[in-house]
Length: 274
Image 1 (cartoon, rainbow, N blue to C red):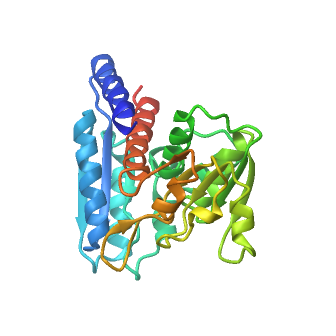
Image 2: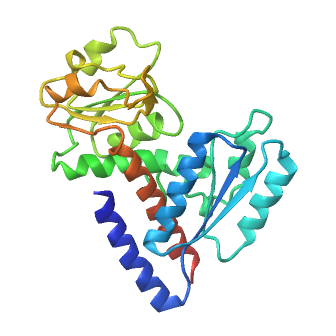
Image 3: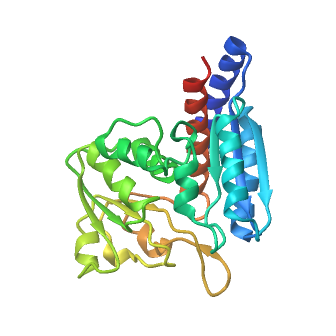
């Protein structure tokens, strides 16, 4: 699926270049040496190259101060060749993530974390969607199953995945329940779900006996188990026996997330290049 969407993006990029002579540009800022973040940034740069984007990566040292980071964001806000800006999270503890998100021009906020963009998602009038929930919606759409009228359960309430995911399912007329660490009798709720999206960051948290027969199960989690193997939030082997569709980890939601980032950057470029 990710490959199919990327092929379409590449085609649209070629058309944009032919018409305007300009190429979508994405700037990624990374502060410090977090190993997972380094992998994500490499994958994003590779994705940009694949679809024909111009991309720039700015690497700041772990000890970088707020002034330096904000000055870079403001410089990129003004740069006409950059249409999307992404600051890789998490940032080192001494830096204020909220302040950085607020500093990014909402028109270039291809992560869709700025309050302007999250507000637009709330009312259903948006240009960009947060990349992971957007990828999840594409995956659900690919099953051919109609969301309208279905029981949809989202496990997790983060600003990045859980909350926007619930909004998008609601906009497609799903009946949505959000579960979290304080939810009582979690299994009772998850077992009602026709569509179950799990994003809690706990390895193998949801097991097959917590899933309704024939449900669509989307696993957003990425964790390392005791053996150091990458696993999701859903216990795949037991869940696979009851689900009608299920995403693997790795190789499920991950590739779609980066693909949606590319799609957002293309949209931003199309809006900004006149």
